[in-house]
Image 1 (cartoon, one colour):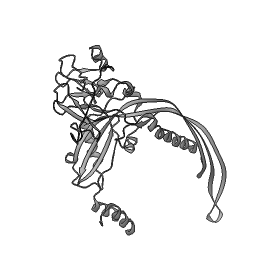
Image 2: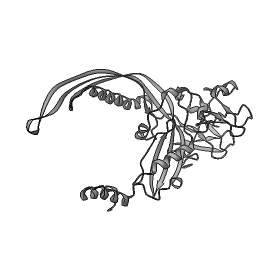
Image 3: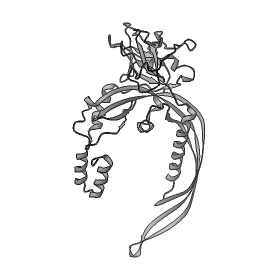
Length: 360
């Protein structure tokens, strides 16, 4: 059976969950509010016996085709809720979920021990109500269809702890470039002066994040950055209570190349920023990245899945800062009118309409 790391209110004994807006545990029954230290002082440490964790069960072929808890993934396994005994069908990488039958938090202990145990976590700070408010505000764009009703189009909204690798290291870079300065001279002509440019430097990086879930859209996760690392906490399973969580299914070596690329690009940008010419043509860029430390952490993310006229849309929000991202549907008639009022040429409008399928 899946191990329920249940947390009880020290005052009344009811099940208690982490409250995002309060930043602590809040009892829905007696109103008690408790910090993690309060819970530990009450004897509720949430520690997992790594040698005796409960294991998942493999599914027989064709036994289930979709999860029971709303997780997104095709590689499904079976757990049993230790509170009510119901079967929980979930993705193999799920580390925490909610039993849809009894509403209790279920933390899959085998997913947070040994190599899968995170070193740090950033707790949720944004509550569910704020997500919908932000979604409504985000969707009010000039080209959004009138009948795109936020309340009705949301198929699923989940608060999920996403696994991240954090890379610390440095990048040494050298650029060889041609600098060009321009100035006006007599007869309204432009005079150009050319310079040979060389820049060299080393840039240090701390905790460059790369999401470690194959199911998560990399661009979306990049778009909702940054996270405030001042709120990094040593991992404790209690933070997962009441939310979904995933463990990594892409190891640190597989994700390393994305971190290296980000360091290389940032170093090049920093070197180019020291050049104050009107134009800069980089002819060569040599770089060398040295990763000195890799850390495993869980970051809070709100995920929204919607369907509009048969088309799927995905949105994500930083569960700490409330930064929002996603692609909205476009009203084709509004686009035509907007283009005409904006004075866009007919050929451009035609290309836009063809691209979005108005003439198909």
